Image (cartoon, rainbow, N blue to C red; front, side):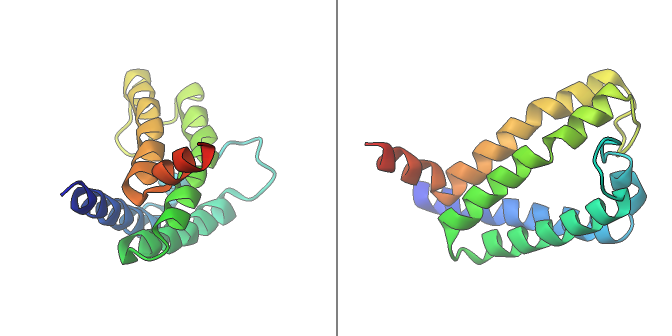
Length: 134
C-alpha cells in the first residue's frame, strides 16, 4: 500500500512539473522572468525557457514511473538549484503568481524543502541513499 501511495505521489509531482513547465513556455513566461535573480549572468527569458524544458522533461520522467530514483534525485537537485529565484523574489519584494506580500513570499520559501523531500521520498531515492550509507 505504501508503494502505491509513493507512486501516486510521484505521478502527481510529475503532473505538477508538466503543468508548470508548460506555463514557463506559454502564459506565465513574464511572471517567471521576474523571479530570475538579476545576478545570474544569463538572459531571464533563456532561464525561464530552459527551466520550462527541464520541468517538462523531469515531469514526464516522474509520471512515467521509469527510472524512478534517477528522476527523483535530479528533480530534488533541480528544486535546490531554483531556490535562489524564490529567495530573490522575497528579498526584492517581487509580486508574481499572487504573492503580493512578504509574508506570502516567505511562506512559499518554506514549501521548497517540502518539494525536495517529495521528490526524494516518492521516487524511492531517499531510501536508496539511506541503504547505500549502511
